[in-house]
Length: 270
Image (tube, rainbow, N blue to C red; front, side, top):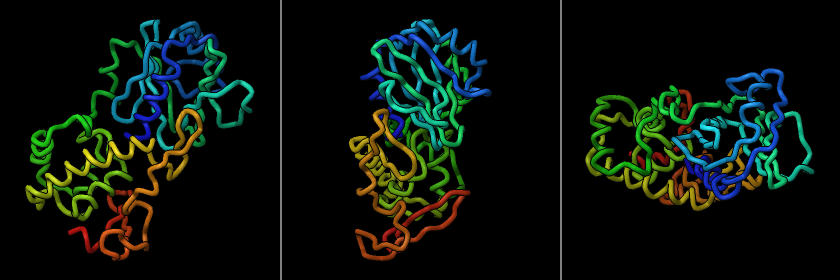
């Protein structure tokens, strides 16, 4: 969430009110739900009326009554650049704006996409309809009630499940559980009331802090200006396998859990 929300805020500040005067779709099989010709025809001439976010998806509302539903996935970038910036093979869609800049979709592995959707039907899209509540919009009571619905299951994979809570990925689930002193392998059914409260407190503390630093650039993430996020030096366990825990000095461990990595301190987290 901190990375996607950073991009959303920058888009809302930078391209809101701008008109799309041209579009170049540079793939034979575009990362859209329309042909290249149809996509260009429907988007050209539209004004960008605002940028919204739902979980890990960005929504650019257009004056035409349609919206651009954008999922950057693992390697996608949205870059706000001047036309003189060189294009490379991983730049797949270029929006020409009336302020002389371009908004480019860059994606190394082509996992991301941009869909054109009628604005009034956004909530019908499967990728939006299945999301759980936003991580920073829950009350403590709502969070505890959600946990009650999950009688079993390991806590880290649950926190990462977007149908359960929207906005916690691999990095921040590790950080939240370290904050709470809970091992990622713990079964949800074993959590004490105080531990549930600490997990909630960790979510409400760590996500805003990461957002303040414009996210964590541990892979290919950059903001729309090509700048890396600055939260990595503040990470307590993620990516620190074999290093000393800042809290107790024990060696940080890394395991595979639910198909993803999990970092934790075996001493601080129980």
